[in-house]
Structure formats: structure tokens, C-alpha cells
Image 1 (spheres, helix red, strand yellow):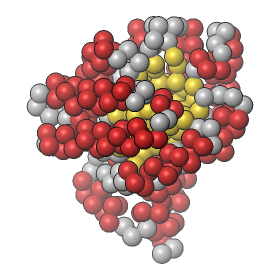
Image 2: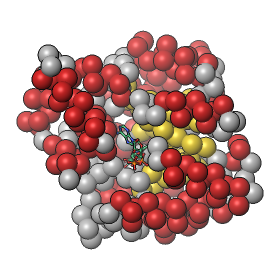
Image 3: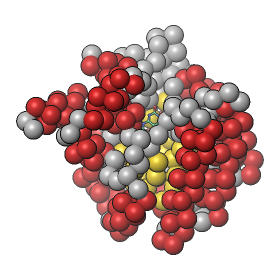
Image 4: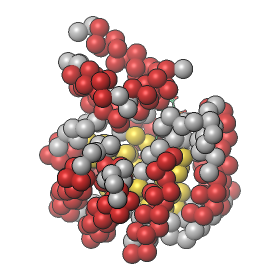
Length: 307
Ligand code: FAD
């Protein structure tokens, strides 16, 4: 029951100010967002890749209000890619981007987001890696898929995310399960109405399996974005049934969640990519992590009280 309340708070400016100013917030935030600057994050990238993990990097932020902020978001990614060039890790470290942060919700936002994301995709390709477009709330998805299709004309390896909780996603999965396409399947992290999305966990889980089967039997490269142990075993079984080798799909999990499982899957020979967020505008990302698991909220509240 708490999840929807926390997701509503993730859109509230008043809550943003309150929570951001709380003295203990930082310690709890660090569990999920282990740095604010490129200098903070480079040692983490080196450490995780040395352990056999791959990464997808997210400069946190969304809901920007000016074109200047959108340009700043683009530049933050370009700065990161500049630093990755020296590390020479190629596709072991890719980028995840939210188009809202690139200006998608501003007037003329579709074109603005495309214009801002294109140089990031170009710079990533120049160092041998890729970009994946995150999925945000359902009202943004037609624009996201159109931008994805446009970028794929020049950079076919550009990935995108689909969300199992949306009714539309099975059809999207069929369209995207084509040769050369990279698709991350997640359950979905936004508060969506019953007209467009399954509301019950068991319905979402069943949809996840149906969609994953489409991706595994298709021609593309499935990226399984989940921490759910049941879905991870099912994914392994579906991959086996579809005759996929270990390097023909990958698992993805969030930094700070089930870290032992990241290492276990990598040790078994799986490609395991850790979604690693950093930056100062962490509020929305952090609140979605609290909404996913009430125990996170209890931990957060307890640390506030015990200070
Ligand atoms: P759940 O059933 O929620 O969780 C399974 C188990 O995982 C839990 O029992 C718990 O042990 C653990 N767990 C899950 N979440 C947490 C948490 N926050 N804290 C602690 N433990 C936890 N959503 C989008 O809408 N768009 C995106 O672009 C997007 N990208 C993502 C990228 C990656 C790599 C991942 C892993 C998730 C992404 N998500 C995205 C979030 C996703 O939609 C889910 O909200 C999130 O992954 C939780 O679902 P789950 O599959 O892990 O299963």
C-alpha cells in the first residue's frame, strides 16, 4: 500500500525539499547512488569492472524545466564518456538515459530531446559502447520509441526499455524483437492508472514471463532488468529453451540491490550489468527505490529517528 504514496511523493516539490534537507538522508542515498561527480564514480567503475561486472551508467535527474538544464544533462554524459575513453572499457560500460532529462517535456521537447541525446549516442559509439533509453511514465513512451527508432538508423545498437506492467508492452516486444536490437525488460517503476497497466504483482509477473519469452524467442538481445529470484531462474530456463548461449542475453540489476547476486551470476559466466546512478539530483531515483521495497523506507525512517 505504501508504494503508490511514495511514488506520489516522488513528484512533490515540498517533499523533495523536506527529504533532501534531512541530515541522515545522505547515508541512505549513498546505498543506491554512490557518488555525485565523475571523480566520485570513476573508482566505483574500476572496482566493479575489476570484479567481472559490466555497468550501465545513469546521471540522475529528470523533470527539468529549461533547455539550459537539458543541455547541462547532455554535457554531464559527455563528460562521463570523455573519462570512460581513458579507461578503455568499451561496451562493458554503457549509458542509460532518461529523455525527460534531455528536455522531452518542454515545448518542442521531442525534437529537443532527440537533438540532445544524439551527441551522447555518437560519443558512446566513438568509444565502442552504447546507450539505452530508459522507459519513464506511459505518456512519454510514443516519443521515446520514435526517438529510439530514429537513433537506430545510424546507431542500430541503441537500446530501449519496456515495462511489463503496461498492457501495450507485449506488442512493443514483438516489434522490437528483431535482429540487432537491444531491449531491457523491467516490471515498471511509475504509478500508472488501471486503464493502461496491471496493478497486481502476480499479473505483472505473469506479463513479465510472457514478454520475456517473446524476447528470448526473437532475434534481438534481451536484457533482463530484475532482482526477482523467480524471474531470474525462469529467464535462464527460457534462454536454454530458445537455444541462446550465455553471451546472447544479459542480466541487469541496480547498484545497491542484491549485490551478492550480481557476483554470483557473473561467476556462473553470465553477463551481469549493474545500473549505477550518480549525480546530485537524486530525489526521483531514490524515491522510486523506496517505493519498490517498504523495508527501505523503514530503514530510512529509523535512521532519521535514531539520529
Ligand atoms: P520486485 O518484485 O520488485 O523485487 C524482487 C526482489 O528484489 C525483492 O523481493 C527484493 O529482495 C529485491 N528488491 C527489488 N527492489 C528493491 C529495492 N528498491 N530495494 C531493495 N531490494 C529490492 N523501471 C522503469 O520504469 N523504467 C526503467 O527504465 C527502469 N530501468 C531499470 C533498470 C534496471 C537495470 C533495473 C534492475 C530496474 C529498472 N527499473 C526501471 C525498475 C523496475 O521497473 C522495478 O521497479 C525494479 O526493478 C523492481 O522490480 P524487480 O523486478 O526487481 O522485482
